[in-house]
Length: 302
Image 1 (cartoon, rainbow, N blue to C red):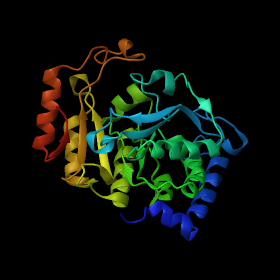
Image 2 (cartoon, rainbow, N blue to C red):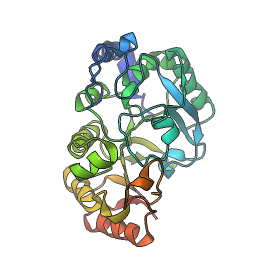
Image 3 (tube, rainbow, N blue to C red):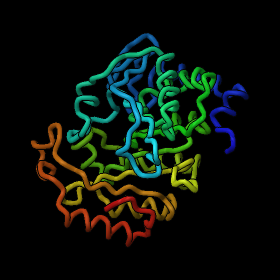
């Protein structure tokens, strides 16, 4: 196996430059499109309500992710606390909205990566990493010195700044964003982010530019590339057909897509018909048919 590009960035000194740039961003935080402009280096809090240090809810081998990420020994997930979105139906409400988790030193984050690798995990999967990009970058040199060598996954809600993603070029091997909605009004109503559709389109284009289509090795384990998740919502609110068309025509017809059928009303969703009910089988089957009709053939779906 070729040496990971993040190790090459570290050895060349480029990773140190990226870390300094990311720290500068935190002094007037614009890591994400919220552009809160608070000084998180001084522990000021913006929309995500986290400051200087990473906050982790849990970590461990995860066997519920997509098959190419799980392999035999699991995906080494690190669940960060909080989120830069405000999805009213979030299935991790306690983590994202109630912010359950523990603030840890940068050194501990590095040791968690090494611990997961030592358990045999095929990758390190940073879940909801957008607001902790700086801290992840800071932990990487420490983890590399301790022997980190597995692929790194950026597992986000898709509400990511292109400028921040450019800082990550060569750092992450696999990007796994959500593409939640096509319609601005739906995005505003359900996630308080009206500009989400255009932000996600730009972010996914940049992610694909960096890593290309998903590459899976002979053992069935993903090594590099883009994997897009799309949660189908009741009554077509997520705009599945338009999103699949965008992925096929403007990203790649070889885009690996997980078309997810597990929507259920969580959080405050019960207050917002029609998402106050579960997704029907017919609605999911329609989304599957639309994805295939639009040219998406690498479908991880039922």
